[in-house]
View 1 (cartoon, helix red, strand yellow):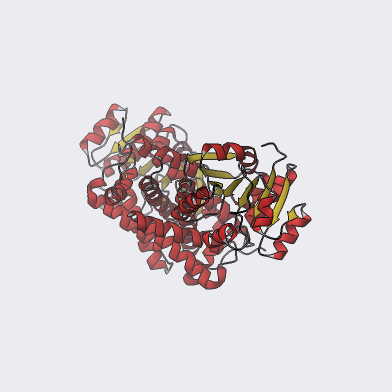
View 2 (cartoon, helix red, strand yellow):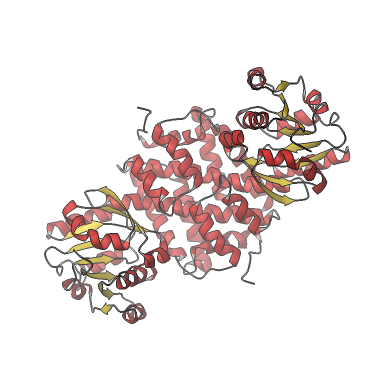
Length: 301
Length: 301
């Protein structure tokens, strides 16, 4: 398929909107669908054609990418009322890019294949800013034929693509392994920064020391920079990684792998959500620690 | 002090040996002391003058750096029999570079100051290879006058130095905050890699996906590269971070900061030590997970 492929994006939240705007900027005809009218309105303002249902969208597209919240939403847009399962044209490809339990992705791929629908299990990593630039990383699994048909679009969505295997489920496994680490590294960053502040260290100094030392992580640098600015405007909302960590903990338990970090991170994120931080940026997990430690966090001014 | 400063290194294990050899290569007269004769013999072969006690070493040095295992060993070389406390010349500086409880570092500095001995609390990060190159990072706290007298030597030991405060204790606080993250990020890396392997993913693929995604950390890249090679020859032994994580957990508890990651990491490291991995490289924490998950790790061949 050329850059003229007709692409549909289902779920235009922060990530999906980034993907849609990036594809529009690259000259694709983009169709969009979301359950929230305000998200559809924003997509329309950016130049996307809003469709009335997943099925209506799928009928007009060569490649359909879904970036909905979880596996329940994925099930609804695929097999629910006016779902895409029965509407994709022969030769079209469905790209499942939400973070879902690996077992669900594998099962979904099998159910779709039984109906003659080609699915790629292709979760992405990198956040809304990189989605907007087309520089996400993507973990792709599925049949070569489907991957080759979608390759042009995938390359424009995710500059870095990892081929994880020939069966849906493999991509989701790689994604959940990564997000387990993102969640643990972030919550631990919040714990360590709070400890430093409580011990009387300057926040910027802790940031610089850790960034130059053995405790550095990608997410420490990204999210603690927001903490230094007192900026909790949501890019990735706390509830997203909370969900991913629940999947990671359940996957580890099911696989018989010790998961003390997965469960600890899941519980800390869940407590932050219970504290009211679910819709804030996930850097706000530090508020869970700060509130309990009696520490004052840096503010915008 | 010029590059001709006479420097003593007490504790020439992996880190201290790297520091001593680096200083010898830069033309310093280096004196060394260790409780293990084989370590002293290696230092002598590298050109260091071996001294019979911390006091004997201190009498001949302008700057004395200690890199012993823990605060008990630090106490012994400073205030034990033939300790350095009574032997340093006026104007000489004692640089305490082991990782110890912040409260101990603060107390030690006060006791030495009462005797007229200048101490810098200056833990280092970066591992033996960077010690050998003089490219460690160092978190320095202590009086400006002492720091200025030692600055030439410190600059040759640690290319990156952070000034954390004017009182001993501050440097150790910054160090323990960093090592908390190093320990958590490493143990979680082992958990995630084991989960990926148990789910049937290729180890090298997990390494590449995580390294390019939001789960990346400095220690994931460093230690999982060793896991891919099946290489557990000790650079930093597992028992070292085990000790640091105990300090981090105790410091958090004492400060009233929630420490679920500190305690989880401490317990996982302690279990790995109980499994017999204490003297192996700390990448061997993955053997704790692999044994329980029934996963076969990559081997050297």
